[in-house]
Image (cartoon, rainbow, N blue to C red; front, side, top):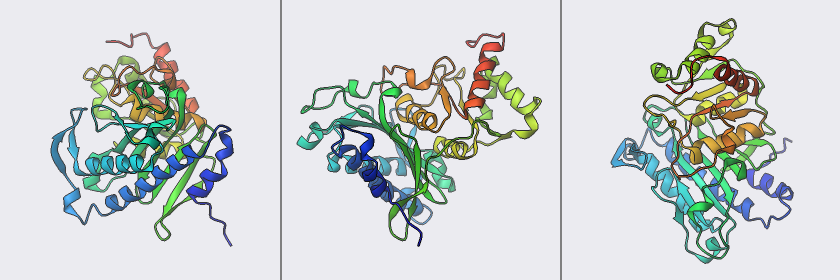
Length: 339
């Protein structure tokens, strides 16, 4: 008989990784898993229920049109995390400011969460994979009081845990607590996430590069030189361009198969476009724990000190050797990075 390990069993079994743990982090991860099941259900009904497709007509803090499933996912995760009482507050990509939970259990919690409730949501109407990205930090403010903005403005290297859920042909939850990366696939027949990808290791080299080529003319000369090398260089025949437009989907594929994901700054977005707290930091923590690397082009992603909740940053992330080669292009090419 095949032994099945559920997410709950795995979390409880590995609590020993945190000698100070009282089970709070374990319960918090289970709250996230619970909310993910609810969002999974709605994502899988999207083709049948027109009311959850399309846009709400609202604009979020990012200046982007809010889609109905964006709003739904945001509400489900906020509700689950508040009712669970295991975190002091949440900063969401969909909200202008962080939310400090007011009940006693939440004020007594050691943790806060930064979350992108539905990454790649523009793809949902055409049945392409979307996802949720989350990041957990130990709060720096005083216990037994509401959390503060400073609790969220910590460098990525301070993360206690991070993960993502990908809603695709199957729904998977992938997470790390700083002790390797493990993936769990949702079994709809029993309603449980089951361990399917233990101890994930990203190959040190891959044959995939993921970038939005539409922005090529807006990239710096150094980034263009690297992309030209990928397309026309000595080993270009072994490289394939694969870009979904959902960070979760692109990173998930490259994590399992090897590759590099690039989202450079452009002439339109001189500070980069992806959000440091909600996308770059959690993905960088996961990929580094799997043996990969992540950089802004000038420093390790996890070393960046955030100054704003919705701060943006360029990111180059994936297989260690591929990221290293890209960074060498930035150093070796004569043209200045700033144009």
